[in-house]
Image 1: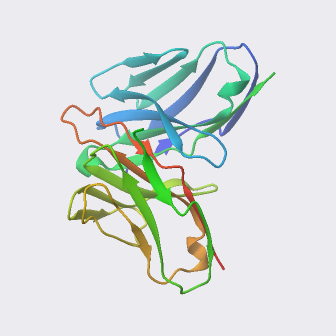
Image 2: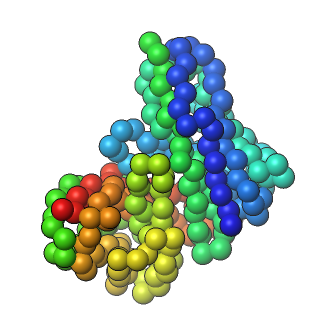
Length: 112
Length: 115
């Protein structure tokens, strides 16, 4: 059974620092992996999607990498800003009927 | 604007009183799905649909029903709500694409409280 784990559950860093969020999954047979951002009480916003054949995707200050063989993905945030404070979730698509498994998220707080 | 719209956004109801949470998307997406989000448990899939008249159970389907009579709508029905269905519910949709680039778009969420 596929399990998705995000560690740490919460993280606080000073503004301006570069940081890495981690996501691990137990079954490497995935279709794609998606990173989301969720603000308190709000829905999820898709940040980056990495297809199983890709190694990384970039959007602005965000870079997501995927290593299927080790069951890991990272989300790199450069030059963090207070507006980056949110919960970040990763989700893997198993490909079978588009079943998607979410991690529980990392709650990020950027200190001004 | 491309979006997934859920209604109601907030609802307080009592045990046993049937309710429906509507979900509508204007992006002509084939795939639609319902999730519930609970503290410590994360997002769990309730039901999903690959296209019109095609629905399947997710991880926590008990106590819920869905229908997909039209491509744009995917309502979530609670026939006899119970307090353990108090949760934050999200609807999401995506296109079905061959190469795995099916980005999920989420609604804003519906916070349901069952007394």
